[in-house]
Length: 118
Image 1: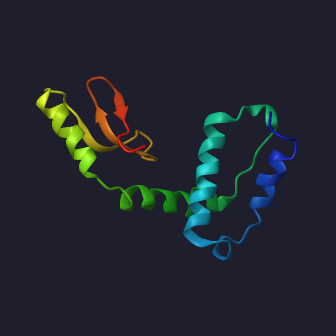
Image 2: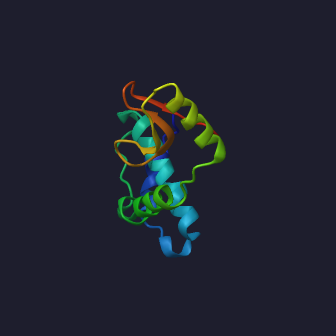
Image 3: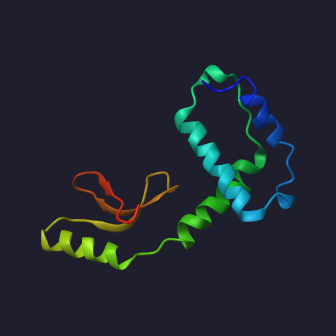
């Protein structure tokens, strides 16, 4: 269970001046916390109000990192080559439906994601 102060912490974040709090890394961390909240936290913690910058600056930073920081390693290519040799249809660096994550390999016929390097 989350502490009763949890909604208050997000309320306090609404007053943050994001331009003075660590730049891109801060925004990425906060958006990741937002994603974890939306996936894992039940409504029983009370109403949580997210800062306006969360879905603007922080989301944009997250999307930039997904778009710009994606690399295909030699090991990715080796696994892809093996899948190809086996006749398994696959995609390298596939974006999830919400475009918040890129998975190393995706097998669309099986709706399976494979992370090669963790």
